[in-house]
Length: 555
Image (cartoon, rainbow, N blue to C red; front, side):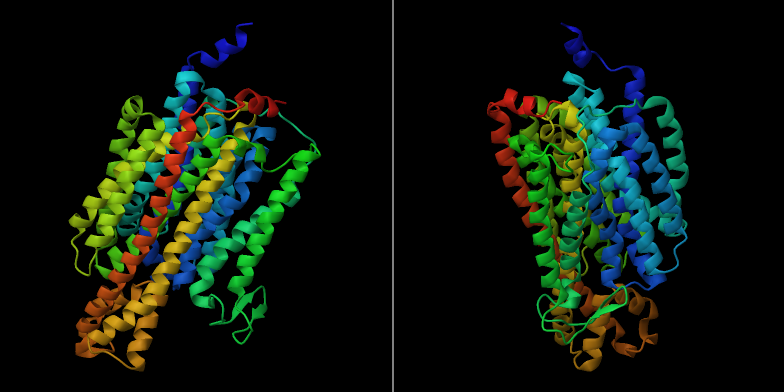
């Protein structure tokens, strides 16, 4: 009679704590890879001749595929074994990293990022669901704290690592570094990570659900990223996909069609998942998870936080390097202020949670995030010193560490262990959708804003006409790399003695556009704060029909 409770409440073994450390490092690798590219992006743009849309896809495709695959791989982890899938993911991820390091064209690099994403999709749900299954009682909160701190810390330290590797070696090393680290994690995992599986098994594989979710999420992010270049309603340029051309003279742009495809696919996905549940077949997403209000509101909050976080990580390196003229390492050091804040607050999160509760700590964190980004947007200018930018970034990092460390455990606190794979995969999917949309929204806002601010800034500086329009468009398409090139050429550029005037004007225009992108990020973080308020109310209230909900999910 007492065996089950004893198992749940017994202290984790030394091997299980070591397994948590190994899983956290593996998770850190894939989270780091989602942000390490940002500060190296200007160098990659210049080397591989990417345009702004290519640059967005280098960042976003990784998150899009993660979002599309996580539900499937979370379900697979429950069935096939979480450790086994974690090890397989490491192999695929390292192979993708090697391919990315060897890339010499935009297409190869984007394809390599897709391979990395497949490996990451195997790794992420395996880590969280293993933690959820192994650690119980009071130890579970500590384990989730480590997991959440790794996410915030790795995401924040990515720009510094990318800056150091790019400046002291080359951008290729931001991918090559994954090879030895991946090998060490693989070997350590063989000996320390326990194998766990979900016990709830139904017949069939939900292939249709996987396809619908991939189409829906992929079409949504595609529409947001491509909107500024293809046109939100009327076509602005041709779109070529697999040899087929959507012409510039078509009646409507491909973007609203993509939005419609996304909406239809996601609605059909929900209908299909309900059908699979009704006929007792294996479903990709257990919609019953959302009967837990903490799970629903927690995921909404996590999505908004991810949108804001990745919007900042995408747009700030472009501003620091291309507009302000910092070198890659200098930009990495400025952005490392986020990591400093995240590590400091991550360590203090448990103590704050003891006083204010998990959801209260999340609210404090989100309040700091909103304050930090809003202050940054107001301080941003064409000649703002890096140390001044680092101050609000530190405040933002403090908030990020507090919110991330406590949000994970709160979201999954009511989810039965037998479906922890699906629960963790759903949470990870939501985060990845948020990160993909964050890059997409930031890139779209930056592109739209640059189309307005750059011509205005050049006009105010006395530079008008076709040449000024061409310069503004080149700067927008290159995500600001043109500014850096003009600064290096000096009076030897095609603009002659007007080069300095043009650089100053373009820098001012780029700073204004960056400010708008940061304000969009602030809006999403504010929505996350509102979601956290509802999460706190749901967490504090007695869970209605909790036993019935838990029983409904038992095998």
